[in-house]
Amino acid sequence: MTMDPASRKQSSSGGSVGRLRALPPSIPKLKCACGVSAMAQTSNTARNPRRRWLQCGKSEGSCFLWIWEDLLNEYAEEMVAYWHAGEYEHMRETIDMLRQFLADEKTDKGKMCELLDAKQNELKSTIEALNQCRLECLAMKKHLEQVKLSRCRLLYVLLVLSFLVVSLVLRTN
Image (cartoon, rainbow, N blue to C red; front, side, top):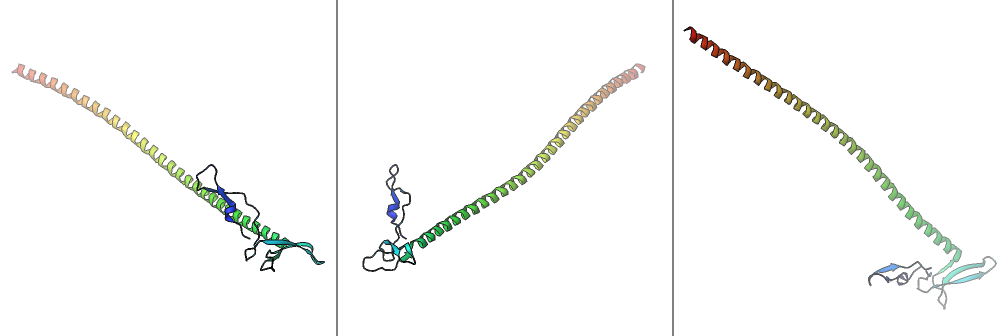
């Protein structure tokens, strides 16, 4: 079976001049190997009453083509079913691939979430440790200030006592 490719396409009325779009498919004409369209005939024999066949349409004897119409229709239906089965199988394979991809992405997302949770916990621990160190530093600073104040007081007391001792020694002399 052949189809004229020009009959399947036309210029787009709304688009650019060079663009083509497909028309709805028309019923293709069955042609003989010699290029002449097939003609339908009807059998009048007792063995095949009213059974149709197709043969080459050449006027002077038939060429290569001769087939029962019902067998040709059955073959065409099987070819359409075969084509659709392949198309659906391809769709099923694509869907299966997409499902697997989605499952892999979910697994990866789960692993990333676990890693993120672990890093967040580690960060919280580090922040808590830093806060504890800061509190310890503040406590040490306060302690150092108290020690410094105590030393200043002690020095003041020693100075006063030294002054008193020196004054007593100078008075007794």
